[in-house]
Image (cartoon, rainbow, N blue to C red; front, side, top):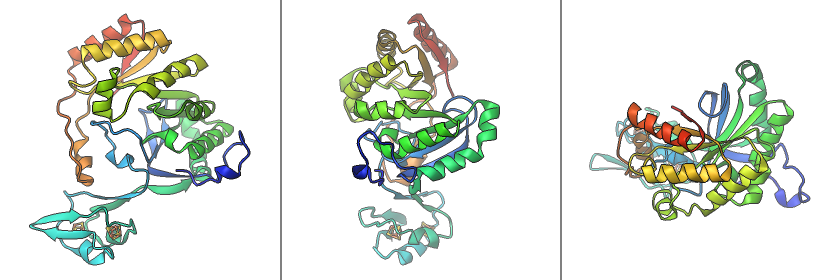
Length: 316
Ligand code: SF4
Ligand code: SF4
């Protein structure tokens, strides 16, 4: 995704600080994406499609239009403003023909309710590092730093590497969150400039992974083993999705895999039911059902992880 002129660089040369990336959010006071207070940058684009994804607006690599239906009062201002005819009001419903949208933003400006938004914008690595630099007192006080997440951070390797290098040079702690669904050279490249790798493991069974995540888990598992061998500081993160990833079988297989690979640190992420509203923004269905695991169930999962010798905690 980066537009940095990678082809003009000699092999092994670092990407330019002016490398551009597409992000869809930036949180300057995050507390769940690594130690301390963090500036978390959300990169757009993901090769996976987890059924429970909390950021469906992160999947597409390019900026896109979202509609918060709960704010829309069907006034028709967007219909009049759109040069492409992408909006229409039909039988009391607002229909967005996304195939027509050129993401010009005219309807966003026209909407009196703030119901429309473009998710995703271009930014340089230099700008991200500059913003991080302004937060350095908070990072130093709290032991925090910068976390790159997504989407999938490895889809924009030049931009991500340039941000990580820039932060490191400024003495700022760096973390990435990744599914490892990428080639090993790309992951290794980013890990070299990262102080903490938050590594997502979802489903150990490949068929189940294909069904719920939309791709094989082969790269993820292979890269996890390679990562462990680098000696990088890794924390595995396991989302606990009711009846999908939180089953005894999946957790047992995941914890065994971690133990055998030499990955000892795991954060268990209880189910959070807040995702469905975002799917409405994009007119996409959300099919996962269930509730946050009760305390007794979380305690049992924690115990299972510790029985495998893991340093485990519930996060969130
Ligand atoms: S962003 Fe532009 S092209 Fe897309 S729906 Fe709005 S006005 Fe139409
Ligand atoms: S302009 Fe805003 S409130 Fe009016 S119909 Fe469009 S999205 Fe709804």
